[in-house]
Image (tube, rainbow, N blue to C red; front, side, top):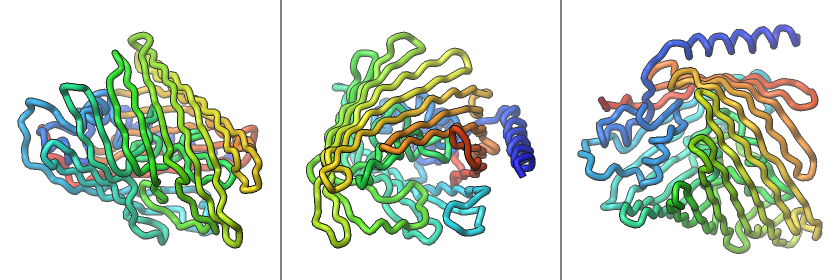
Length: 380
């Protein structure tokens, strides 16, 4: 059985490498590419991940000053067809389709952006991201208001390069269900810090679903912010190829359990990160430490920590192979090793294959997904 799984994984890995070896332009959702008459490859490495130019474009509120604008498709769809060798929901269904609607439109000097999950596995459609963005070129400030992702060193949920949340970013601590990957409802401000960047957030609420929806999970509890959550995120390059970061979050959750009185869980999360590049090789690592003062509702303090290390090799401009180790202790410790390969199989579609193995041992999980963006862009 193990030999068959290993052969299947090796075959899948080889197929992705074969796709990756052929150079091709990368294109994705056409909303912004059509507006400025660009190829989507100007902003994306492998759909939906952004390259350096794409991140700079996002940091400017999705604006290119003094660049002619054209008509654009303001609503687009992203469909993801996932495969899981061993379903975790107790069914025998291995292939699950899921999708999201994306929209962006200019309202004066403000950009309105929407990511609506269309649901899957019996879930209903729900708002995942939805915010107004304004970039001020004179001051270098960027403002967002609405439902947004935390400005971590990489996109924790919407523009991920794997199907598995990174390390500690998806970890629950006790009965507190808000993770680092959970979008926040509130306000964000970012500003250039010399060659680096600093961001501050204040959150009053949070999203409850995932980027593509998923089977609803009944937990028997309800949660909300007992007081605003405050965040600070700093990125700074120390050389042309190395960037370091420091992050912090402080907040409090109001948690209600069926048949029990509501209680508050004050918490904090602090993290550091490092990103380094040399030629086609890319390294990214992050470590977090957290403390919940009342994570179990009985006055018990829960300390947590975790992170990841990722090593990725670029195959051309629009394909990667990578390995990653995830670890978290909340307080139970978990570790896993993951390898993956991804490429643009057409100008509008990404193929991703990954295998996840618990450490020090346990059953492996082979997964894959085909992600398609429609309609086709018109950029030159």
